[in-house]
Amino acid sequence: MKPASTRHTCAVVLAVILALTTVTPNALAEQASGAPPEQGSLLANVYTMTSAEYRACCMSIYRAATYRLEEIVEEMAGEAGSAPLRPAVVLDLDQTVLDITSFQTFVYQSGLSYTPARWSVYEQAGVEEVLLVPGAGEFIAEAEALGVSVIYLSNRNEANQEFTIAALEHVGLNTEGIEDRIYLKPTGASSDKSPRRDAISARYNVLMIFGDNLRDFSEVFKPERLGEGATADEYLSAIRARSDAVEDALCHWGVDWFMLPNCMYGEWQKHVPDNPVDIMTPTEMTVEQTEN
Ligand SMILES: [Mg+2]
Image (cartoon, rainbow, N blue to C red):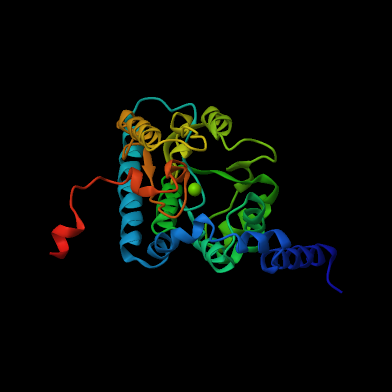
């Protein structure tokens, strides 16, 4: 007979597989109502999953960060006295360290939208489906070799922490002392990472932050919420405000903040109207010019 813990694990795995494969009445209604927004992300998903260009982009970022970290650690070693706090780098997880494109495949195949509940099921059931974002593993290994603590700050559910740790193990990352190095979203908490970011800064000398969404770095990037019926000008104004905030933070990019690309999903989508042509780069070119 299997031990109780094994039986529990089997029951959880079975439950999450059923939840992922069972189409509920709500889901059927959703499928009947037309394609959810994720269907429009198909090429973005395929680009991330298959293009060597995406790999090169991620590797470039992590390689540049590695050189920068080696430089910082060398500078710190040359400074008189010892720093009071242990040096650390802070990394978001999904699409920063963990490649969760298999969830995007599930969304596409099922014709369902992302929901927090479906994502929570994936956190449990997708442990062995996650991959590493190119370059992340090498960077993390180098940081650890340099004596820099690697901290994970993610909005994955804290209630699913054991599964997220299992996912880190699955991709071969060091999980020694991980309970002290992982900051997930407590049940009912907001997606604002600031309180956890502050808690990390109180314990560590944070040298670098990595993310794929602007709010992985600071709440100053929280996107303006646009109501139903917002005009194209209002969308463009919100887009400009977000871009301006990025410009204002120029001193950080590539220095202590490193952004990984994510064209599949993210808060940038909050500023994409139903008719994206309204916000696309304008052109004066006409069909007549090309077809005559
Ligand atoms: Mg992320």
